Image 1 (cartoon, one colour):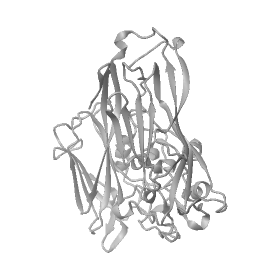
Image 2: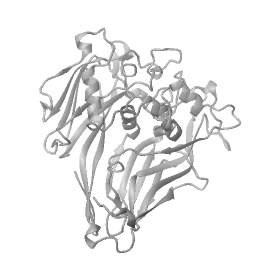
Image 3: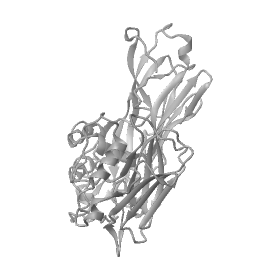
Image 4: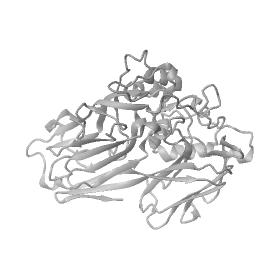
Length: 452
């Protein structure tokens, strides 16, 4: 990590436009621009990656009529996931070294990761306050729909300005990036946009008159802080070094049995934690359901929408129970009349996402982690998962490895998870796996190398 005397440094904020912005300045997945790319060029300066913000304007429409699409009004009942706000549109986040095109970190299913991350790292007051202003987030689904999605009339489309940070290991490492061409060099940030049908959905489960519903972005730019390096302020050996951070690796699979077994070769040496979120496969990429929610698995008996309560959980390493050498037996298996979340499951999720002693702001509660809902999207139903209070349903299975920041070696043995649940119906449930592990970027005038 590089340290310089602040009296020698001067800071400046730079503004960077998209590398691939179309002629009209409007970025839209439906209209053929599914990627936003920004390049912070090599220069004599130190980049503070925590200062990076992507800014712009967001609009949503119910159709794709030319020359002007029709804005959404109250009767259309179109909305997005309220806890995610602008993060609904991010499918994947990739950070590359400009010098060698090496991928430093790539998080697929980024919005699914952020749904759990925001619930564990921001309070309801945060979501109503600064996150509402910067990231279009609201803890109440109806307030979000009225304030972000609905226009007063079809004549004047509502424009929502945003300025979102991008939580990930590389950008939140706390280390400065040496942008000199003979050191780390420049970086490229690429955001893959989410398909419209996996962002927008109708609250009454209908697609009537909204088959071409889509969102658009305009005036998109990236801003960040760079500290200039005066001539002669660096010694020659500072052109090489090590950039340390916690990377996020994402995987996707599905479960469709009472006893689900997940096994993966992670090929990672310093795994710190892992967590898994769920959503029915039939809810993904459809305008009738919220494909970004994090719910319990579903599919019991003759119902696709009834929650399949989890009875037992085992985390495995090489097929052996680890780090606990016993089963996690949930409170549902002990008393099936309980709808409150199991405290051991909640604690495991919290430890998997939040570092020790570094955060006391969260919005999880018995209200949004309970099992008193179903997976039906019915506007008038108070038991629908879309109506869960305090931000929406929160559900994930998490585990933490090591003590005092020490990771666990999964380079030679498989990571595994065994889930015993009520899921007895042919109704596949998507499982999104996120693994946090230590990583290092070793840089020199010859290039950049990733070590995990």
